[in-house]
Image 1 (cartoon, rainbow, N blue to C red):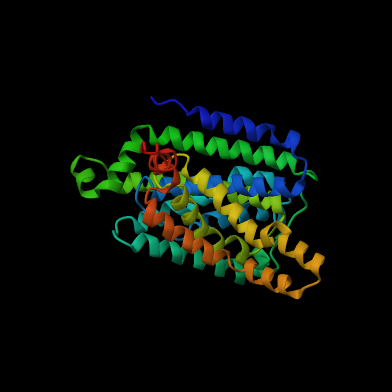
Image 2 (image 1 turned 90 degrees about the vertical axis):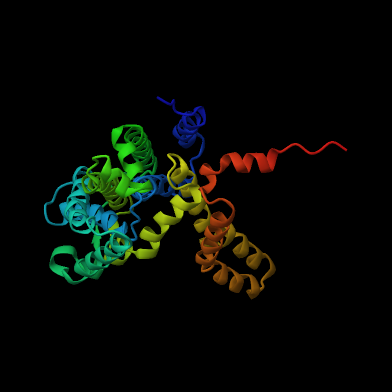
Length: 335
């Protein structure tokens, strides 16, 4: 059995010690979002990267987990942390019948059906106002004032997700998943129940995505249908995180999450306040207008980044790390 890379252990240790030296709530918030995306990206990766079943609607499972936590408070009067225990289960219970219906169909049907599932849930959450609060959403009081407890809870969940995914991929299930991805007909000829193991993969993926949604509800304290069922903010972002980091790799989604969250915040904040600072110092409206353009340019940059990765690093940063290392550190020819 392969050992966990030393770099991964060092990274986790560094992240665990970070709040001791980084007291800024802004950066802790970014790190919490990064860790949430490690969970979501790893969950999508086990489904699409290892089993070959691409999902365009993973926001459906994220939103289900978030609403499970919120509804526990809204209708049951329980703590939203109980939703942490049941958010993943609710998403998994949604995924199992959905997979049973869609997996006998091959090709793009599952991807399109997952997109439809997400849209259906978003509209149901919108029109069922008495049950979900509709567009007013659900608001809860945060349990902790400090971001540090949320940070450590999210870090623990992210590490647990990576450990479970790594254990599954190195088990018999993992070999079945990869065989289905490579050639479903060949896998069936070897006696593998492909529909069963695609459902297993979906159940694991939905569980962790739903758990991430429940954590988001507890941390942010507010959700509405267009927030947690957003196609762009969650379904598409999950795909980008995995593609940039490396589809079909254990640590690719973690690398992709760091890059994508960093880029998104870089543009959202106008290069971390640089344009605002220059505008205040110079008194010019040009920088203010430039900041407004930059804040909406992250989608374009995401698209360019994905195209570049597909053209030059088709296996993602982690998958093609050997190629990157050779290109950057290759020895120069002697004169």
